Length: 255
Image (cartoon, rainbow, N blue to C red):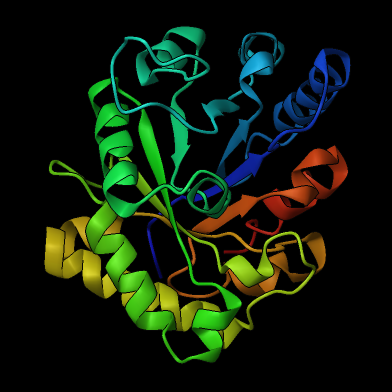
């Protein structure tokens, strides 16, 4: 049995105004306060405008807060961007980098993701590095090659199990209601673990958490979280409802 502690991370994406965001954060904090015994870490990643009020809303309740992206530079003339150190200063402990929506909408390359992850590490943040294949790539039989290449290109020097989490998010399953079968998810997670071992050594690879991100919901969370190389979830739509998000967290109970 794995000793890796599960991580249930909510990615709110570009949703919520201040009032609703505070209500949601407080609802998650209240559930954590009551069920703090659950064997998982809980993280919510709101839009940047809500980080400060969300940090305040969950304070003292063992709920971490993260950013959805960061710039590779420490500071400078980068209008609209946010430095990793700024996220840390605002109360974040994690940041998502390389999400497929960033890779697609903003043409982010593996090299750019690697630089952002390095910046996160330098700022004292845990980088959640996202990788995943499109439907066309899966249909073409390129799933393993795509994920292996993205992983190799996105890991900065100094990566270890304390400063990095990997999130496998099949692009075709994000927000579509489709989800990888348990066999498909475990196959890719096992490949990721093997690549981490080749890069970092067996000890670090066995300690690093690999999340599944692709339409994880209360009704499929338990079977996905029971897979040997799935160490939690990067939750999109289901993280916008406290009941659904917490139901996923509770699916870690027997793992």
